[in-house]
Length: 85
Image (cartoon, rainbow, N blue to C red; front, side, top):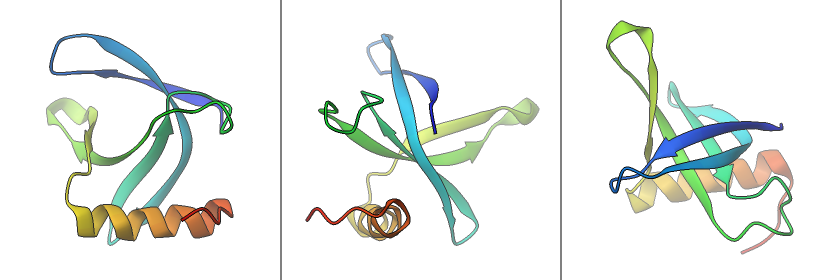
């Protein structure tokens, strides 16, 4: 998957993130994003949760709950064939 999204941080800076995968768990859609398209070069990755917004726009937010993040990370690991711990 070679798509990118733009995330505006709390400081107002916009950053480009590459979508490495997407999945749905419990009716919620999640994205695994990285700061590089090349997994070998990536220095940061995030799991984002999809949220609906007014007007049909889609917003994403960081998953900060440790239990939720771990469950989704395990799912991405299985889907993408990773074995890193």
